[in-house]
Image (cartoon, rainbow over all chains, first blue to last red; front, side):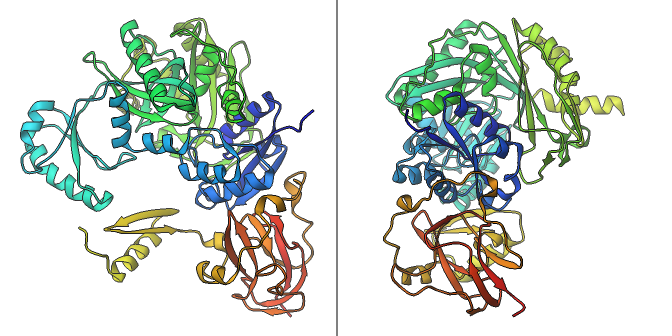
Amino acid sequence: MTEKPVVLVANRGEIAMRIIAAARRIGASPVLAASTADADSPVARAADRVIVIGAAPAGQSYLRPEQVAQAAVHAGASVVHPGYGFLSEQPKLCELLEEEGIAFAGPRPETLRAVGDKGSAREVAIAAGVPVAAGVEITDVTNVVPLGEQIGYPLLIKAIHGGGGRGIRLVTNPEELASLAPQAAAEAEAAFGNGALYVERYYGKARHVEVQVFGDGEGRAWIFGDRDCSVQRRHQKLIEECPAPNLTDARRKVLHDSSRALVEALKYRGAGTVEFLVDTETEDVVFLEVNARIQVEHPVTEEAFGVDLVAAQLRLALGMDPELPEVGPVPPAAVIELRINAEDPEADFMPNSGTISKLSWPRGPGIRIDTQLEEGYKFPPFYDSLMAKLIVRAHNRDAAVAAIRQAALNTNIEGLKTTLSMHDYVLSHPDFIAGAVPTSWFGPVWEARKENNA
Amino acid sequence: MNEQPSWQDLLDLVAQLNESNFESASVSYGNISVQLSNSDTFIGGAAPAAAPAAAAPAPVVSTSSTTPAPAATVAAAPAAPAGETIDAPMIGVFYRRPAPGAEVFAKPGDRVEADTTIGIIEIMKLMNPIAAGKAGVLGEFLATDAQAVEFGTPLVVIDTNA
């Protein structure tokens, strides 16, 4: 009998609870690295031990790689799981852990760097044969109109060295392009130290479809289908489902094959997601980015295919077989996830915090709830507004939509405002029921509803 | 825009960030890069890290070999004694001496000022001098030399009325 390996959980909330469950599943001992605000949380009680790494604001705790690495050393951890957000895609944490001989449940630091920057991610994608949006570098900001003719309008001006949505401008006509290009170059120069720009085709009515990948770090790739995450508000996903509905076999094959090529080319290690825009007006499918981490919406894939991706991440990081099956492109079930946020949908989705005074969840076949909520829990104001994820599996999409709508109606969270009522509206909307809405769908539809009610 | 920023530029930048909600910011300015964190409670009033750290040779023992056996639960911190304590402003390994065999920075009965160094916390091989943070007379040390401490672990009792 060897001693249980220790898994340091470097995150909080529902994903920390999820990582603890995976650690238990593989027979490891979960230790939580927590801020003072979370030192006595339900997640903390679920862990075998808690190490307080810093004060409540994330910038003084969850976002400090040296504090997390130190906690891993204190815990005697074999592996650190970073979850999503926070330090999950920071090469620095990965490198500090490597120095200590502690595994990181995620890709190698060089992979994080290669896919972490828009320009280099696009290059990596092109090299692997992944379709990207038609784009061309601007060589002369005073003579850009011919480039606009080449790409077509509307288009995006992007800073080659930009990132995180910064340095992107939407242009609808040649006059705008001529006046905005020099301005964008000056801004990029000031913000990124490099004024290089390119123009790229803009898709105003595209769906967000992503492919779940897993790599063994040596070139072997697993593909676990696709997810549609097109119900979004201001680029924040609200509802996700697996498989993506109304996707032709040909398009699905392009998405899966190019994602596989990318994983193989990068010798990608662990779980990741390749995001695409799937246009609803043309046949175009274009690469968006690689998310080099487990994602919030991973449960829809897990439920659809019957796998445990987080346990697989931990097993791989510990040098074990990830114990994942080879699966077909389409799962045998349809799964939908609702993100239940501590936000008021009637007040411009303003976040709120407070004590959960009453809580009850629906029960039944195919229902999964990922959360750390419990009655009496004080939902803190310091972090993300995600409270819980309600996930429902059924034999097909229509059944899943109907089942999750009832599940949401049978969910009761009292004490603060949640986005549950918004979900009921979407789940009963004919556009959503039909499937395949674009990412631009939710915003105007939700605003129009409020005006109709007024 | 490759000219060097002036001191005034940097001060303006700090002033601007100080008034905003950033927790940390990293700005490249020509070939100068500036990293700022808004971490008032993190350093806990410690003296600037660089200079004293240079004067404090790294303890010979490596971090991993000094890691004590994990304590059981959240309540790992020793029962807080009556009165005020100076608490660890960061996770790390606490040292009472600048080097093995050297005199301790401070001992019970010493009168300290807010800026008096009472020990060092090593975090990932970086030595951070820990200032008392308040004036008073030190009592018993609750953290021993080379002890793994967490954020908020009481290090030493202090009587601020003495």
